[in-house]
Image 1 (cartoon, rainbow, N blue to C red):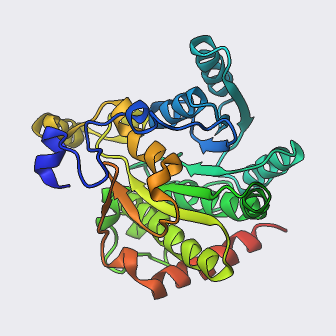
Image 2: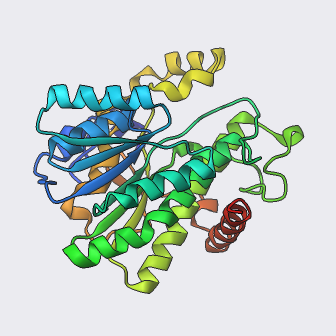
Length: 321
């Protein structure tokens, strides 16, 4: 779309652009037959996506760490839309134990699953290890979502088969995937505090989101499964993600204020990719401002994607005992 499109909001080939909101891009959508899980649906673009999908009739499950925030988000949406079908289940993506517990709880509800939006994330955190001993940005942004997706995949396949409705998985990546470590993914030293850069670690986790999307997309195509997997860059949106950013980010925001989106605009690409009929069968793509973008060379490297897949499988399996 380029800087011009970002500033002016000019629509791209899809008919939408940076000025489009989540309500705009779902204007014609009837989602009454759909069930969606949104991770991190208690604030920012996750909450807006939950509100709008519920407004369009979807049964939305907000998956988030804080039960108070989760229930408050549910009540807020119900106050705005008393007919909304909205539920909350606890999920801490930094804990593989919590991810497995969430998946068990959701599967026990015996609901279909048509849309999985892997939205939650942390950004620019100081170095720390999770309870599983994994660097927190890589753990929360990639490993937690990788495991969650795998645990829910059979449910998504069966839902697609039984309903005839295409399943959709949307991974929230970022333009920050271009700013990673020189080798892309630091497989040998993910957890090394001496080599840690909060910004490159974030970029690495966002690259991992793209690589995960692309590898899973290829696997599902080979199987003939009726599920698409795509990645989105939501744009520059002021949300709670920026709580760890410092003075430099404030200067950057002041210099680039024309490029920043509000939250309804920030949630637009997620909702577009999750629901729009024009994207039927479109998979393994990277979207920004509701249009297809070209990601980095690392992001389109199939061998790197396969290596990350194998690394991630081995890591989560080592934590399941």
